[in-house]
Amino acid sequence: MIILGIESSCDESAAAICKDGEIINNKIATQSIHIKYGGVVPELASRAHQKNIVPVVSEAITESGIQLRDIDAIAYTQGPGLLGALLVGSSFAKGLALSLGKPLVPVNHMHGHILAHFIGVDKPEFPFLCLTVSGGHTQIVLVKSFLNLEIIGSTIDDAVGEAFDKTAKLLNLGYPGGPQIDKLAQKGNKLRYKFTPFQIGNYDYSFSGIKTSILYFLRDQQKVNPNFIVENIEDLAASIQYTLVEMLMIKLKKAAKDLAINRIAIAGGVSANSGLRNKLIETSIEKNWKTYIPDFEYCTDNAAMIAITGYHLFRSGTSGNLKDSPNPRLTF
Ligand code: KG4
Ligand code: ZN
Image 1 (cartoon, rainbow, N blue to C red):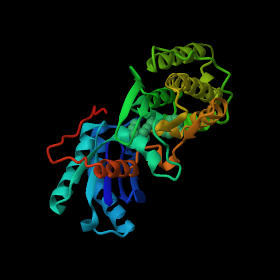
Image 2: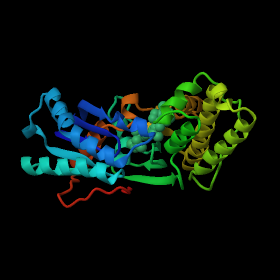
Image 3: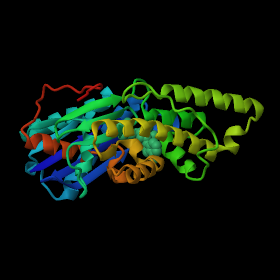
Image 4: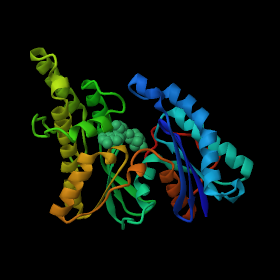
């Protein structure tokens, strides 16, 4: 069974081919245009997808050595994401499906991030808990099967990726800030500055308060020393990262304990963070967890995760049609 996967929810135009459950090609065109604006500009993202979508899909097909007629179904990201960006991928997928007479499989982007764990050799057994951390989401998901997922906790305001990106902006770092904080943090002292990890009820998260408290802290310090940020950038990055990772881990540990589950996965862009990856390994030893950490190429947005999710959906008889609309707020 051959599935073409198409991803265009934010600032990566991507295509991948999944053959009998294995990814045989994975192409990404990253949109660097947003760097100079310090964040993703939706209109520019849509235009870049429009430019990249044909070459990226053609390359994935050519390089994998398949013919268009070999494709059994076309999986595409239906949401969540930016509407204009989703429209490019979904319209392209629909046009191709119509011309080839092939079925469509709409895929939830967050479902894709989680099922990216089924690309590699170390596949999790069900049920497992997945901490899904990206630029738009922070969720603890109970994954009962390929198609049965339950969100048991989520952020009530900012996502943790946003907290990384927004605090990076306060430190005058470029976009996306998460990877830059990560890089600087590796050389800094994480215990130098203490930021209170804000906690709310159950398994939910809130990241807007920590961002504000860091803003006020930096303002106060800069009144005394205008060069405070530049002079202490590594320790600041390390302390911020440490606090955000602590906040993530407190709820993840609580959920694992309450639900008595010791198979724990992380997914989404922030799962590339070295502080989170290390903390997860450390906690797995302490708590006897079996952990699943994605390869770097499958942490951030990609189409392999859409193709593999499309494969599992299609195999179980799920498909869509031309009437399905992109949904910027799609949930499970
Ligand atoms: O999953 P993703 O590629 O796109 C969304 O679906 O949002 O996640 C992007 C987010 C951004 O906020 C980015 O700063 C963050 O993932 N990110 C990181 C790292 N790499 C990407 N955050 C912290 N450390 C990293 N190494
Ligand atoms: Zn994503």
